[in-house]
Length: 625
Ligand code: GYE
Image (cartoon, rainbow, N blue to C red; front, top):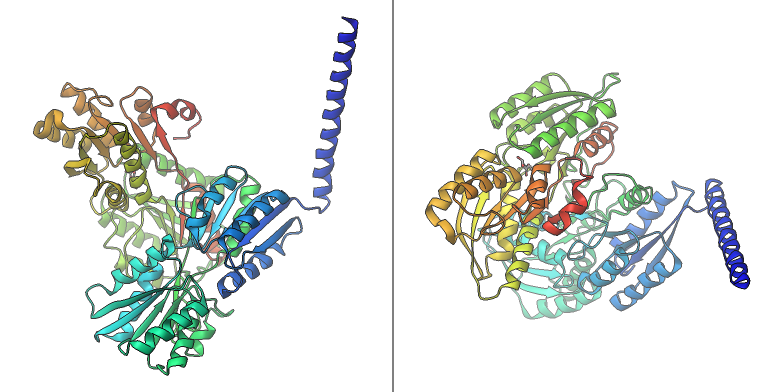
């Protein structure tokens, strides 16, 4: 017995000594860090450095890192090999990097590796994204918009002529290529242009040159080449020279621009135009520091503004959506005009409170107007803000369309406009400076993904769906409908009983559901409500009809307000997709940045989750709305 006690004593002394030593080492580490040591080590994994865009990315990273003496970076170059890039990433993690920044040419090959690293350390994905959401933050451009800008310019260049186009793509199955291609085709739809050939050159200049030299030698009828990257566009230019076909126009993407924002290849007239897709290297380091310093409100996606560069826009001015910093005429306190859409839902109240609270915390003078669901009143509020010479205007647009005139007045007045919560659809996207809010299409996809998982458990069954839509023509209603449809329209296990237009209020949800029950009764299997208030109204209608919500009829909702989470926890809802209303702090940061003349990302997409009945108990208590 004495022997045993003796051993136990020795063991506890050893453990105690170990704790003291470790504590000293950590303290020492912090101290040496505070004396200018390396606090953070960041790994930068590149797929290649043969493409000028990736070289520019490294340059931007170095410039930003040089502003800090306590971060170090390790760069790797996979020389166009996905297998090598996986190895590089594993080595970087092995070196003990605190955060990984990865740029991908072949997302399909790297998505699993990125997801594996994301389980251990933060990961920022740049440029050509991964599929899914297994990363901390994505920084890049909206590839559909990039393709649209290229397509609009192609249509303008060929001016209604019957034009045949060769499209030169990167890796065929990457989301970037698919979205750029989709955007291009949407833009030329209805014109006399036709994409007659698609060539996959895997982002490589020499491959593009070889393939196009062959193609042009055989096909005399090509008017324009649209290349998904600058390096492939340069390959196309070499093919023109090889075949003497110098009359063919070339449009590229991704181009690296000169300091003034122009493109060397446009000014040398090798390309007629290039849709600039910023690398995001600077933003990656800025957000990496926020993430490593555990700042709140880190977004899920940061979409950078893409811009068409032609010989006319070489100067690179204006079209960036960055209004000149307003004339502050010596005013100390920043003045923000906010035109809120209404008070229609629990989400909206939380959004309003977040904006008002954050303005107070930020010391920003807030002119707050509530339009009570009237677009006209939002117009009036924005014009009042212009008259009052506010520094920045922000608003949550009731609908996507109808904003050109009033936003042009704000731009003419030199007042930047920030969209909070909902987007607008205007041809000239320089009418607004930035959008802070959610990815509504992804919210719709998340609702559909959960439903398909339920259906997988009960094969040979058809689910009849009632969809309760939000306010017509509003960005959330359009996006949630589109995203949901994407995943179920071709799945014969699902059928719409009805898709009804509501207005995000509880009353509309209750009335529409009662009508649907009168018409379809017990044949309804699922209700997909575009927000909690309509879902809660539907629950009341279902109970009045004598059925059990959450059991006789599955209910899916969006927002994740407190009342919905309560309903989820007692089984009256089956799934709640989160839509974050707490946008105030990010809005105030953007107001301050734009007032200091800083560039803002085009879109800041908030990070959001999905809650099931099993999950809700763990998360309900510490939610802020
Ligand atoms: O889902 C709804 C609110 O614009 C995302 O509007 C917001 C939507 C939200 O009325 O509750």
